[in-house]
Length: 477
Image 1 (tube, rainbow, N blue to C red):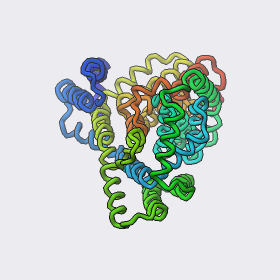
Image 2 (cartoon, helix red, strand yellow; image 1 turned 45 degrees about the vertical axis):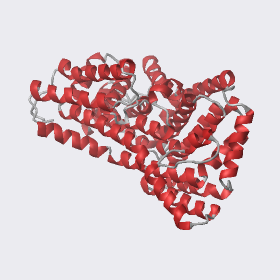
Image 3 (tube, rainbow, N blue to C red; image 1 turned 180 degrees about the horizontal axis):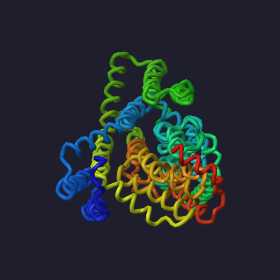
Image 4 (cartoon, rainbow, N blue to C red; image 1 turned 180 degrees about the vertical axis):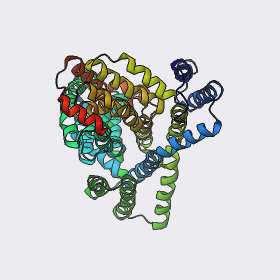
């Protein structure tokens, strides 16, 4: 938006938001649709018309905003496509079947959800990526849990909770580095300060999954059905420990801060290589052609067990295109809202609610969530509120690490709870469960923002600075 043009009114800015909420409700509840591309496109049209006719923006300005927003999401979309390739190759080579077999053999249904959360937490903490964790370990856990008869929404909730615990706390994570950079604190200060909110949230989540496992562990799958699945997997694949090479290689590369797309592609290529060596097909070229086809269209299992076929037939570039399209639609809406100034007008209006420390923290948390809803991007949900509230925290003599913690306590962890957000869309793409279904089981993601608001209201763990330091930081800002 041009810096010389005043912001649109708050009422005009809320028109596209109301339109989006109404269209999503109509699409899901009235029409019974589970795809939300069209409501996002229609809401983008409403935002564009409001900007052009009521706020006098040109189409070129809106177009630039849309293109800029989509460009900012290109890397997430490339990661999505790469994960689709990884899933297909890991299915066909036997990597995921091996992990599912291990899971069925070692994990009791009563502690499956709790264990899933912990495993994903450790992997994500080591890699710094919730996306890689959900796209690798999470896929295997979904498969193993479904075979045990556990509700997929519960499994997805546990995977998301664990993945975002590690993503939030890992020094390798992009958002963990972005939040203190926007707030003016250091990485070490930021991580140490987040311990106070994420630790009780993790305990709440683990207790919740322990209770869920105790009361709902007896799914539809009988022991005979589980054994049938394990027999089918062992009969259809050569389940050797050599198949652990691709996931271990992928995790090592990510831990070494290798770029995610090359790391994922190495994981896929290593799966093809190991799969060819382990299974020793009669026709090398035919098998290789099958891998190429799976990378594009997704792996199609053809065992004599229909449940296994449904479990393993996933992935591929084509399988991710629906999610990529959803991301593009969502970013288009966010681009129009940002370019027109309507998003800034909404967030500026929230500043009127700030009366003290508690309301400032709560407003920051709510704003981050709102930006996640409106722009469908967790990075914007950290960057925009970080810019907006930085000086406000300093004026109240609050250490910048309070702001950086609030940014991640909402901007990061609420992103996978919104199914049109890039993170929610990615989780749906790899786990096969929509955020609209699993959100109520993502206990950690739900608890962290509430705990952060509680701390702001009570003043507990809130760190203050002297008047001199605050003035110095304000001058530097």
